[in-house]
Image (tube, rainbow, N blue to C red; front, side, top):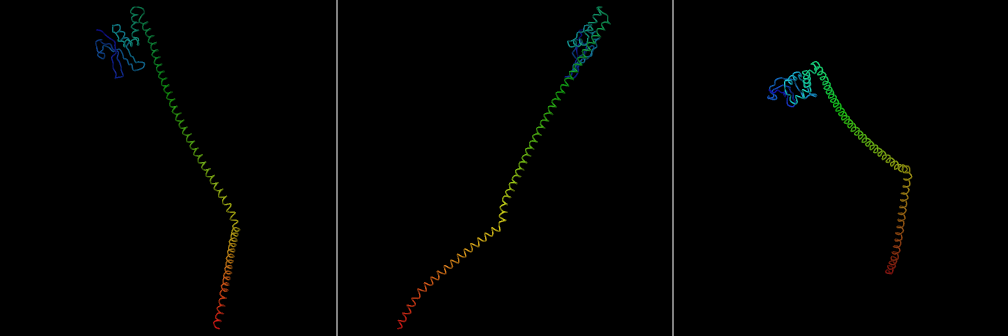
Length: 261
């Protein structure tokens, strides 16, 4: 019967988990197995491997053939190297104690490599985390700077608007003050002649009365003259009428006397 060392899949979809088993080559992958040698979890970094090295070496010496993945795991855990050392003991090249000593040194060196890899991965993870934190800090600082700049610009704009409004208000106040001063000056200028005229009012009124009196006097004199002229005219007319009537009367008188005679 052909025997193989292979992986038997377990775990959920997307989260594989394997058993390292010894099984009949004709059995299904996830079917019956002869012996379980260990486990393999590829999800972790580095991968988690637990292996019974002595049992794996026994099955290798009995002719079990590992699959490609199983061979890589056996090599990684030192099963193939221990099988090689056991071959040297069988040939008499060195004893079993020397083989165990050499295998122990190899395991120690391998542990250092795995530990170094783990530390390197941890350092890389820390560096990546630090870089991400630094990048996030820079982004946050840039956002804060942008927000501060926007706030400063808004404040500057508000201050400029307030200064402009204040300047406009001051200009309007100054204009109103200037207009008021101009109006006051104009009123003072207008009131000054009135005051002077008011002070001179008695003389002005006296002059007006005199002028009116003079005009009335002149008119009365003119009327009197006109009346006198009319009276003279009437007198002349009356005289002329009297003269005209008088001779006729005399003539009529003489005619009467002649008639009587």
